[in-house]
Image 1 (cartoon, rainbow, N blue to C red):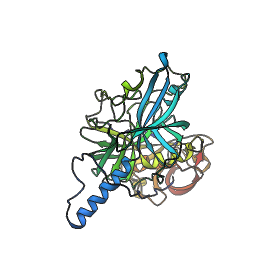
Image 2 (image 1 turned 30 degrees about the vertical axis):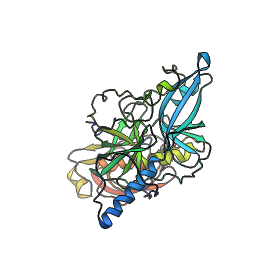
Image 3 (image 1 turned 60 degrees about the vertical axis):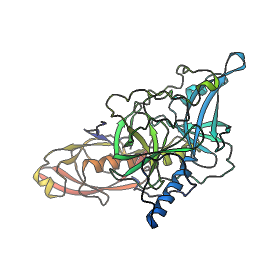
Image 4 (image 1 turned 60 degrees about the horizontal axis):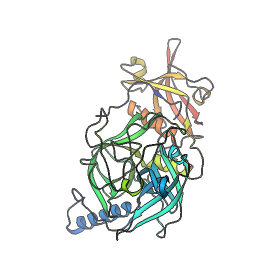
Length: 406
């Protein structure tokens, strides 16, 4: 089981309020689904059919990202082979933390492959636009698809224990849908390159036979890059490995076999230590959406910056509780000199009472706030209500802080 992170929460690299998007309708799905979303009678049956159609449309977005390089005898070596998702008419996203390393190999080229319903393999060249080293998300550009797809928009944030569907393409081009549930709407984990906000899902048999790619040089223990949707086909995120590894553009060339022998074969390793079988980590759709908007324009995503760290403290002073603090309370642990928090008047030792209109504030609220600061909060003002203790007094203050960027 993957634990929640505890201790101080740094808002040094991390308020935009949640925005809800709707998913796009699509084609009828095919392939096995462990349990249908609902009964096939009356309006409920129509709803289930619509959900399957939307899931089928999402499966049409799954493609195979390959990086190949010339080999002896006129053959080619497949250096990397993993699933990718079509985000828009010319934009493809993949969780590929070592993609740039593979593309540095002499003669290496990226391509997007997909089998149509007739089993014919179709390939298009692709070029890397930019990658985000923290999350491993890479954005590639390719030729416009004949069937222009609308942009893939995030669905509303799911609740704990809600149904999730892992969507992938089989070797014959048909979609495979695997049903599971959401264990935690957010966990905050360091995947080797810094802390990321993630969903934690449990999907039995997630490493089943529906795989359409060869091996996952970036991670052998999770369905990295698979599309995760809600029961109605809404986009929830992309499956990610528990460890992205260190960021290194100049690393060794990854081992690979020759040509097509590597394709349509999958070797699943045991789950990483600390993870139960079937546990899947997911980069949330809203984070993918924010990063992709920047990366597709060849811009490094700006991350919001508050310049303070907050800590959960048991049993705050009674006077602090009377002024609206939660129990356990949230205390400012550190303020970075010259940062946005200090400029807005926040001081170490202040007790947090409210974030905007949210009061009282709990530790999960702070975790969510830190995510919203980092992904899209830069340049936005936020009101923080704090209790300040000094000279024997307890004073309730409201501070307006302008979130910085870095």
